Length: 289
Image (tube, rainbow, N blue to C red; front, side, top):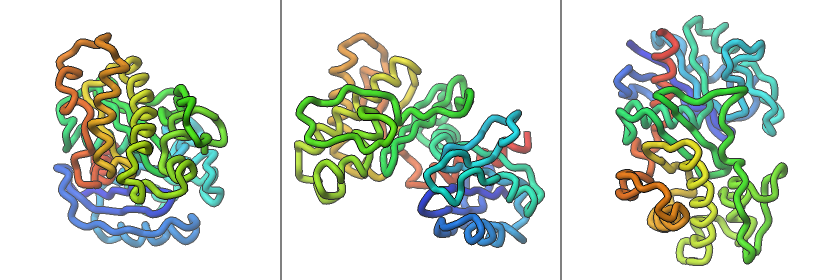
């Protein structure tokens, strides 16, 4: 079967056509502007390609509750042109195929569970650390939803007393996203992450904040694997620092084989940046079941 996949981001929309085994046949990037400009371009990409279903991993917040009257809508987003936009409805009307939708980070989690380093696992945490921080969570093999979807990037963590910066989150003064996202790094140090590679103090603080958030999620969710993606994690020197601090903060409370083999437990995304679009392929496939 041929499926359509859309990874809907605030900067760009990645569209693809692929097979159920995750093989991507064609992929294209479309700038995210307004729905009036962007949606027709996406529809044009999919038309005539014989897709049998469409999967969408979208920036949020997005209504993923199927019984909701606004299922498939982008909700109270700071991207004002997209606020209360019926994303699923627009594609349903144009393409007339089944559609599955979830958050972009849940989609990445699903991609890794279906085709990547978390294949065969049932309980997985995927964190993206970039412009924002988002959490994709699977419990008992299913992506976690509730009254909406997880917003794990906004869990509250203790701020380092010597931190020269301030939270960049307009809602919280000590949440993970406010203290450890890409914009937080830039606001604190005056440069983007990739310009600070050799500044050890930057990564000591960054790894501290990320480790605190990860430990909270490990203790709450008991995931079998923790996967870290997003632009900030291109700074690969963070991985050993995060692992070391996670072990220190857990302080032997969790004495499991996974924690003992922490290098295989806290890992980078494994699908070469395609985990989101591959997750969307799986969302399309699931929409037909």
